[in-house]
Image (cartoon, rainbow, N blue to C red):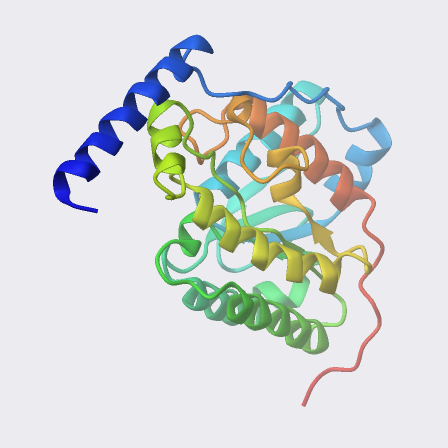
Length: 269
């Protein structure tokens, strides 16, 4: 196709996209807001009695902000401390793990922290990667294997700690006239390819940890079972807004409160 022909096709596609987009209001499609389900008094009691270590980056801060807000509203005294030395008392010890864009470095950093003082006293430990870790040329199968094997090895070395996998968070996918033009030209809207990588990683975690009850499925909560972050739960397409933080925090508390004790194991040599 020559350049003039390409331009003509692009103009026609853009005109059609604008017409269709304006016909539907040129607004992103938002899913219905999930129903609030605050933790019960019994769940708060169980949650607040545990020593939790959480390695994460920015979406993790959104979640912990939601947990703090819920705890305050319920009148629950819940220490949330940023430290790499672990939880010496019941509450949440959390830290910024590694660097965004380097998921293997995050996995290694989490293992190093858990093999230090943090691993001596934790009842539960979680590692959450970031949506940005799946940009570029990230290999989801390789990352899922490294992530899963690291948690398994840590579980062997620290049998008193329950290691919980966390699915990678999603982003919204581009909508509107520009997205439609891309589809007409055979290109993926912004966010689609990256979410596909994230969900490929998540599928491995679901298969490996879901049946054991040691998976916190963040991505499923964000998407409501779809393939993208619900636009009603975010302020910028990636991070959680107040409603999103509350939703995930409610499920975070309930899930960890109901988590069974760590499986028995033998300390690895």
